[in-house]
Every structure is written in structure tokens, then in C-alpha cells.
Length: 400
Image (cartoon, rainbow, N blue to C red; front, side):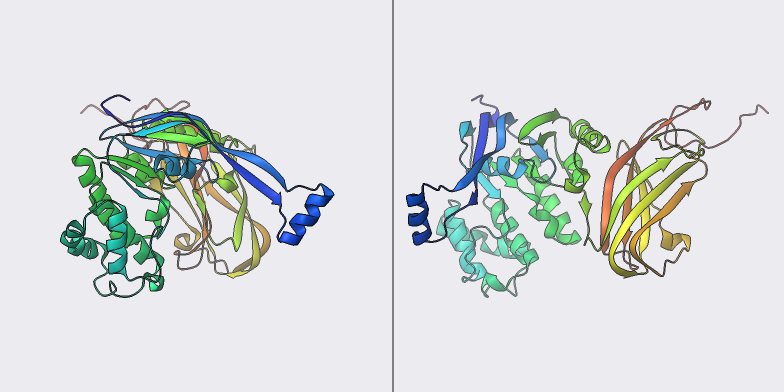
């Protein structure tokens, strides 16, 4: 293992045994044995021959759709799951925040769990006592530290877990998606703490559905698909490749983590059309672009709000109109239906653009279905000679 490597993963695979039919009682087991009947099962390869080398001081992000194997990879790195094949080596003390409240005893108080888990992480009692105030203050649990954690909300669990995991000042910090349960102010505090770790030269590994955070925080990204490592490199490049797979339909959009919502209304399909009514995802600057959004409401939904957004390939948020801002009040929807959004003159310059579609309640705070940057269209300049920037603004030059 190279001296500058924090983690070395060589040809790691993980195989799970999935049992479809199992004897539930001793009697059933005996009868099935006499009949020669065995449990029905199959093997699932959650990871297949993964090779990675993470340098000391590097912050890496692992992305992929649900069920791709990224969380399994994180558990292998954290030594929670043993690989079926291959080897993994660490260089330094490791602290992992994998599952919400993992390791906490629900019957013990917050204080008791700090001492218990601190000891598990290798801290002496005197060190925990010295860091105790810092942990409680960061977790914002001063009023609740003496009550059993079984009474904590998910956000309180997460705050305590993050505060404890970072207080041990590990060489390698591993974080799963659970940061998503925190409120905005605490997320900012977490990212500030992670930046402090980066400045100290610590190694950070993050699995997240928030691709913007991966791009902002990470030096390198890895894309896992069906248990395989299919792309690695600069976060922007890996994320671009991931989104290209989505836009081509090579990744099931219903299984993409950037889709979320209650599901009371689901977006069934989104299609782009030219001014002549031809379905296409290629346009010229100045063209009309018409979007047809097909949906299904499983029950009566009062005053829904439909919205869209456009982002550049560099994730610049260009616009975000919705029916409420436009003044189109929809009394209710139920069953199947469709809505159209039309851009009469596309003023974008040449490039690829990501398209978001969402359906919200009237307050625009609760999504029914939210496809975040799951679609893409391309723009060519056509007869427009301008090449720089994002927008085309009709103008003229005159010497005076």
C-alpha cells in the first residue's frame, strides 16, 4: 500500500444470499428435510471487482442510483461488511456515520450513548469527558442530553451521530446519505465542519444523492452502477456522465435518487417538441420549445403547482418558472392528465441543458413528484454567430 494512500481497495466483490422461501418453524424444517425440499435462494452480487485508491487528504464522492451498490461499498470501506472476494486496507483511524443512530442504545440517554460510543471509537473516558461539552453544543442537544435517545427525532439522532463521529478527529471520515435529514442551518454547520477536516488534510468519503454537494465538496467522484465501478474522475465529469445515462434512458428514472415526492401525483412522461410538433431534444437558438408533461393523480389533489427549471452543464440555475407565478391556478387534478409549457423563443446559446420538472402543493413546499435535472436537451447556435456565455441577447454594434 503506497505511503500516500489512505484506503486501498483491490478487486473487492460482495455476494449476498437471497432466500425466497424459508421454513419458518422447526416442524416445517423437519418435514421439508424428509421430503427432500430445500430453501429456495439465489445469489446477488452487490459489488463486482471494485478497484479504488483513495489518497490521504482527498475528499471523494460515491454516486449512483438506488440499489447500485454504493452503500454496500461504503460499508465494506467502514469494515461493517466483509468482502466476499478481494482486499481492502486502511492507513489511519477511521470513523463512520453509515446509518442513522447505528450503535446507539435507545434505552440509554444521550450522555450515556456519548460515553458508550466514544469508548467504541477508541476514546478514553478522560478524552470523552473533555470533549463532551463540544459534542453536545455542536449537536444542539443541551436540553435533551439527559433523556433516552428513543425519544429523539431523526434530526436529533443525526446531529448526535455527526457530532460524535467528527469529535474523535479521525484520519478517515465516512458519511452516508443521512445528512439529508438535517435542517438547512445544521447542514451548513456540517459542511463547515467537513471543510475544516479538509483543511487539516483528513480523508473524507461521502455517499450522497445531492450531486451539487458532491461537486462542491469532492476532489474526485466514483459512479457505481449495478455493482460495477463505471466512471471515476473529476466530479463534474462523472456527474455529467451519470446524467447522460439518465437522459438516454440507460438508467431507470424511477430508480434515480434525484426523483422524490409523496407519490400522490406521479409524472408519467416528459417530452420536448419543436414548433412543427416533432418530438426532439435538439434545438437552435431562437427556436420555440414546447414541453408536454403527462401525469397521474391517484386521488383528488387541490390546487397543484407545476414547475420546471433549466440548468447549464456547469449546474448554473438559469430559470425556474411555475404555474402559480404565471397566474395559472389549477382548481384540482385527478386521474390522468397533461400540461404544456412553451418557450416561445429559446434565447440559450450552444450547449447542453438539464431540465427539471416538478409538481408541488400550493405552498410549493411539499413535492408530489420531483424530477431533478433528470432530462436534457441540446442547443445549437444555428445562424447566430455569438459563441460565449449562456444567453443570446439581440443587439447591434455602431461606430459613432
